[in-house]
Length: 453
Image (cartoon, rainbow, N blue to C red; front, side):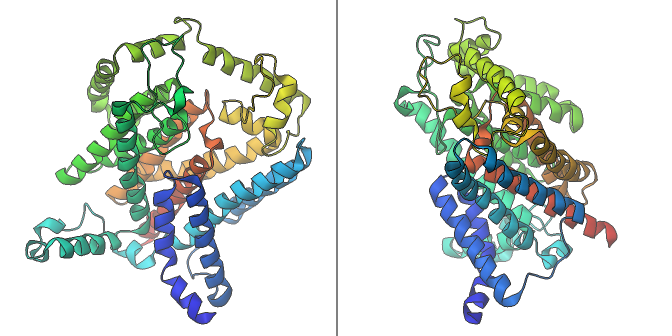
């Protein structure tokens, strides 16, 4: 067992890095990776003890996480189908907790924290003698070696953004070649010019759009912080533009609005001279999207054909209001789908399963009660966001500021998009939510260490 623990101790970081990278690609495979990484970490902790490092969370913060977990477990009692709610809790929350556990313990390296090396602040690899004299295989090895010298949170966010290039490219290819997901996301009667809504590697166009909003947030933040490093800035620009084009072709109106508000927040909070480029980008998106985009935008204010999806969302909100009033302690984790048919006064087909109410805050309130929503907000706005806000303005290096600004922008996008849709019911998106929050805490800890030096 000791030999196995020694072997795993050197591999867990790479397992974690790989797991974060594959989150948006395939849900079941991601679940397998999370499980294997967590099991490896547990074996190492059992044989060799936990890694010696400063606690990322203060005692009251740890208490908030444990309290939310306790409320989630206890809520199963109020579900109309306790068996399914319990097993969904084990499957979903188990993954969140497992990945968060490994992330907080292996997401930092004290040596790298002290060194404060970044891709932007180190000597460009392409200008080194080793690079000039190397062949293709050797250059790949040098790139991987340089990548390994980066602080671990920066490696993780690089994996997140790097994989987004593939996700965005697949979505754009779906638009070009006309993949329609069997037509279930297109309503030709309401939007005759809308033929294809892309979904890439994620479940549906709205979930993909929520993911792309996160990509645009971090790409924008890193683009803003790499002004003196043209090659890196170009890389982040390409990443953000590809994500934005793919987001356009999801035709997800709520996430269009979320992205627009997020970019305007970026202008107000961090870079006021970006107003004109942002407005220019919006105009370019309208020109690229054509009549289909205009129809979707017009439908937001109810001016195009009486869009049924907007009416449906309003019906969800009314039903959820009644559910909250009659179940003040909540209907249990994953319990919304079981209680909704009783309050379904809109859909003619009572057999349609409704997993959530298309509003992240009301959905948590309905399932976990007001106390569950309160603790969730304490974690999000009382732990995650303050760490990101401090980094955004007082980060001790470019990448720490970029991580903070990325999280602040992502939070804006999640809030605005969450008012009309709840894409974080999806396990992959939920994993990203907790991963990005955990990374923000890790970066805040690194920043604190540098403040004390």
